[in-house]
Length: 561
Image (tube, rainbow, N blue to C red):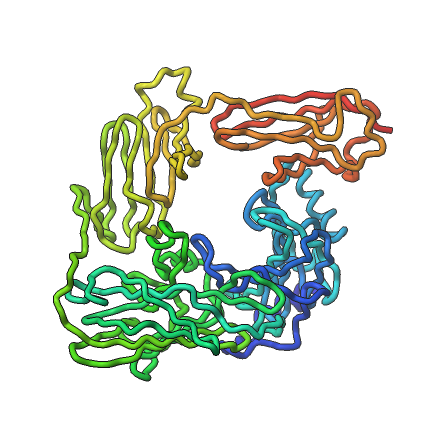
């Protein structure tokens, strides 16, 4: 079987961009498909790589293998996809199922054996081709809410043999959708020092005028020079009110197409460059994602097509022109937006502000910034653009610009802590100040000698903070000396208010037991069906450690027959 499947994988045909098999895959669920999220939807720092399928607000729905294949990867994590299953199919595609409650009995037994061998709840496995074969229609898992899920649903993907996610609807996964996309915002961007819109060199919000047929017009604008546009747009399906992403956007200038972005496939290597597609500063300040309908330098996204002049338009004096935007969802519901432009070269009434500081970032060069006991290192190509950066150090507080500029890479902040008392050093950590109340949020901190450092992709304000609080551990469904013979689960609540939980370890009678950690409910759960606990009298010991090394030990005795 191994040789047959490998041969099929190696010799599978390479389908053209639109030639995806329509009758090969079945739906992963046996309910009507209703979406909470669409493919390539704009998310924080990434494109959504699959479909989020609603599960009627419950967990435990049966999930089916969409075709024959084998389990090629299993990952169990506290965050991200939570419990996730990857099935590789003979036609070269891989299906992905995430945020699962649990796996089928055979797969569950396989995973638990490995978890006990490794003594870790978090695990990543790559079974051989003949270890866990799957047939179409097999129950492979049950839907859940694990990992970084905000509610019960199935995250479902189809990837090609280069691990690129593809819109699953291209394979015949059907969703009822007769509604046209909605435009929420439109902005015009003067590009270059001589350009202006409505007499201003600054970005201009344009007034949307909805039409009866669902299309939009814009109140006539005046402009001159090189101009770009950005829009906010969402799509809704028939059976859900979720604000989902659209499938395709085209633009036309005086009847000639000059820009297209098509959300049918992307690679994980490029997903972080979503922040180059959107107006990042607008998102950080107004919490609205505007898609720029033009391509700036250092934008490597592969989603663009039919581009003229990078999507910009050039408006000359005393001309009349029309800019049209065509927005489509996957079911070919189309919304049009028309912008009438009068070319008018008049002297702008304002000046485009440009902040100048003593420190300057050249994007294609590495940069070191130093002040007091703090240093910051930006590797080459951390940023998309050159700019003046605001860098200021006051005692142990680092002000590093405003968090309104997108980054491509992580950079490093380092603190020299040699001035601190030795007994205090172990409880120090680097925190980013967040929110209206400047709450110190733990930034993953490492120590080497007298230097604390963190790697981050966020500009903003950072401080040295101290965590003197130990984690807390509290039993949920038992007390010391309890009989738990009729219980299936052993549950505790763990928490750390300052830097968060780093790790935990639980033993019974000195033997490691598997406990599943749900960070959303701060709960540790052991399933007695694992069959590990066989004694009548059982001594439980749980050790929980936070991110600076503070730890708490909980001990209790329970009984089972």
